Image (cartoon, rainbow over all chains, first blue to last red; front, side, top):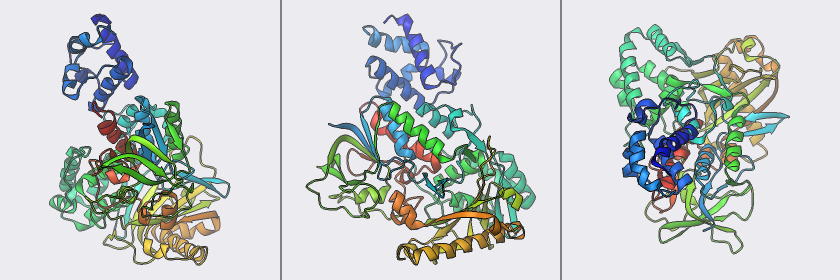
Amino acid sequence: MQATEIPGVIIDIINTIAPDEDTTDIKSDVKLRDQLDLDSMDFLDIVMELRKRFGIEVPEEDYPKLASLDSCVEFLGPMLADK
Amino acid sequence: MAYDAIIIGAGMSGLAAGIRLAMYDKKVLILERHYVAGGLNSYYHKFKRPFDVGLHAMTNFVPKGTKRAPLTKLLRQLRIPYDSLQLCEQHGSQIHFPSAQLDFDNDTETLRAEVRRAFPDQIDGFDALTKRVLAYDDTSLDTQPIPSRVILEEHLSNPLLIEMLFCPLMYYGSPNENEMEFGQFCIMWKSVFSEGFARPEGGVRTIIDLLVKKFKELGGELRYSQGVAKILTKEGKAWGVELECERGLTKISTKPRPRSEHAEVIEAAQILSTAGVPETWAMTDGLSTEEPKEAGALTFMESIACLDIEPRELGADKTIVFFNRQETFDYVRAEDYADLRSGVICATNNYDHATPLPEGVLRVTSIASWDKWSAVAKPEPYGELKEKWYQGQLDAMEAVIPTLRERGMRDHITVHDVFTPTTIFHFTRHQRGAIYGAPEKLKSGITPIAGLFIAGTDQGFLGIVGAMLSGISIANAYFLRAGA
């Protein structure tokens, strides 16, 4: 997967786990939590969806690295490169 | 390993946990002793009618789109659309004591205005208490228990108001006599006063059907009429369950039995029991690190009267009335078959149903005695006693809402049904019919046996919404997180 595809993947996951959130205008450099109503349960679901869809494991201490779309690209890029 | 997880009990918490696990591709089996799902909030048919077992109201009601509320969270976690619950809001409820009444509804301002009207000098304390309750983090799985009475007394100087606030919160969730742990108090306050009451259009069955359907769609397996005789352990770790040889509800056992040669054994990597803490301990042996915890002392009887008239035409225009017929409120185990000094009246019709119910329904709940009811021979004098105490409950309703007598409620009753603590035990296996479970909660959900966890009533979240959140939280924490 190209790094440029990652924001789309994350947004697709958010649309799945939180269908009532408006994800049309998300800024990539701002924390997801500051733009959307997501709590720790939702972040667990993002991680679970990543595991389910791509077989990658994100340890709990790395959850903060999923804070914004930009940080997701940076952190997940290498893990998803061969997916 | 046959299953990643076995869940004991298809109540609200077991089904919610099952959905979470199945959603993330765990191979999961739910075992339910009853032939119907729902647990403490189930339903049955009698007199060609559907009856809800325990549900007067679904607490924790919030409007669609409300952020960060327990109901919103759990629907998101279960991926169930809000509208599918078909929630109908209450018309307004009341705390009814002889010398004061406080109305409340799904708008928090109503109760506040009522406190100001009835207890003008207490309003500042009430506001401070409200603030403190709302600030309390009751979702934490590792808080220490503290009693709530002292905290109420810090803010309120009028003992009557304190009793009145306790009345609905204890009745809707306290396993303890005359006291509530403050975390539990906050959960109940938020669910009853801050959020509120609603009823699914089709009663509790609407929710149960949604959960079962979702669980099965995700590939979960559910076996009815299949009780668990024993949780099997080896070197302090659970590895499976032994099923009861005799299927269904008939068997009464609260002690582990010797392993049967012919019993079916199912292996699982992890086990989640929603049967209750003492009930779960009774399924394990070799549990030396901890004595079995005591079952709760508080249990209830309830009568349901079907009417050929709407309750409001008899003057019963509230949705729920929490009544106490004397000045002090005694939330204690009943000495006699039932304690008719206080109770709860629910007029099921008084919700904003899209289609009005086909008949009037009044339910009245009283604290009852497990010791008395469980010692009575069946069918008689059990049947006679049920009738006698049903009449007593009607008297109590008429005393609280005098128009019921004046307008001839009894002439309008077409059929009635009564359940007692032994009914609760028969269908749910909660020891002593304790619907709010053991007095001591196991917030962490962790047991001394590795791989065995607790969710549901005895984990400490309350009500239907609380039970589902309990199942979700425990499933997330110990079955889904990385490393689990």
